[in-house]
Length: 346
Image (cartoon, rainbow, N blue to C red; front, side, top):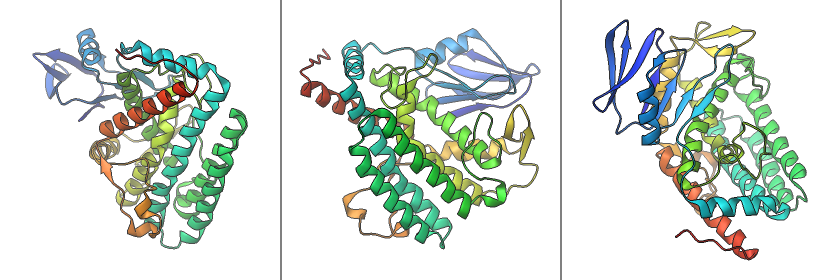
């Protein structure tokens, strides 16, 4: 379960195994620690240091959403003790050929995820399949080109072109009336980009924790470049699950009654959900993350089916993340064996 703090002048304490949210000295909510999987904080509540300590010990990620002066912050426990796996990660990342091969693993996973995105679009817009078919051809062509990419720059260029084409497809068929013309951020300038940014940020906090649980170093990625303060491997894994966020945003916008008061716009903040609409979003998000679409929808038995005939498999996001980090761990060990590197997880 997720716990969202979205109240002004609030205090969060930890008492007898539960988180207690107080407002003006009065207890308004109690959340047991045991089932808690994520804490989302909006605004500037007062949080006792004990709360940070117990959340860290329990491995519960915390996402502090951005305000008008500061970007989002993702908090969680530190590096796991599986030093051999982390050492292997660093050795593989130091070899340019292996880094490129591993970056291709992430790009191919993201490209397969577009199957889910296209299923969603074709269900919501019956007139879209001709464009979907053209986009599918482009994705398949890019997958072949990605295998032959000679360097990381060329690989990221191919991935970026497909992402731009996907958002252009959304602008044509879904979100034109909401002022959406393509992806923008920092700050997002329209409702669709606001929701996409929020979804990707919430996803990142859970991805980061999964990467840490698996024993990886989240700061050393393969697709995303190293940069001070950037957790590049966590961002690599986000790419595998982006289609799930797109799927959620598409369906939430079509199923939720919104009006001009549902969002607000400030030059420094960009477009944001209003206070009255945020609970609707977070309630839907909490339910969705328990039935998250599996990131790889390109199963053999579905290849000959129309988009609308193939329903995606789903599962709790935490379990899907653990499965994906396990697959990546196996992939890394294979790459290490090819290069004669020893891995001992004793």
